[in-house]
Length: 286
Image (cartoon, rainbow, N blue to C red; front, side):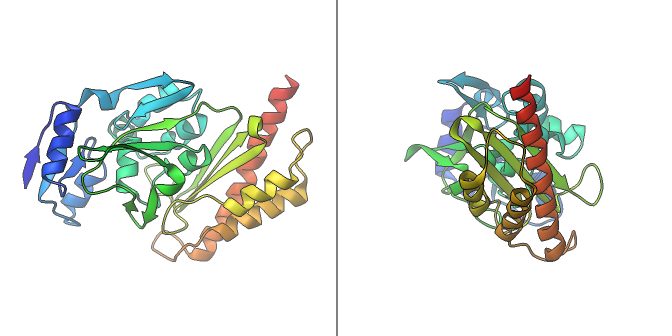
């Protein structure tokens, strides 16, 4: 196995262009597990730890641009205010050691349906910045990034450089069901983001379909029915939960049954929207 170690982004793109089969590695929290268990044996590893710009974030034209390697710990500590949904999800990732090494970029690269960062990225309309030496930069909406089980829209010679996420204009919440309270892969997960300025609500479903996905019909239902000046109608909340459950297409596996996942998505949808709505009304009243 070759071990490639670029020190700049340009060197990384060149290495990926020359060896498209090289697997990028930064924290290694997903890749090394697969190698250790002989799930895959890539011909080359592309170590990105020396590419300093991947560890940087900035606020550009009102949107946060977060380098692919910024670890979950820093998202929690430095970006928890403007990106609350993603910060909540980051707190549920593995152990402190994993949160110190793992990153949203790695989550995106693995494209696992169970990745904790995917639902809040979807709910907040995040955009993924990728680049190749041949085609340059591409901006891929999170809703179009996931194309199959552990497959993304990345081309073989592309690398994830950053993700772009607007600061929250309303409450955002994330919920996750696992077989225990910590260091657990999600049985299923759900995120909601209120966008009061646009009079709409974003959603994200994790670990309950071949890919992370939005509950589009549920979002459209709320857009037409929600009164932004009143408490939540219980009937509206129930219908929202039903539509979110219907948006999932889960399977039975060792972590849970399809039926349980559908039920749990509905429960989490109802709870997260209630939390977010109460938070929203409380802020207005303050």
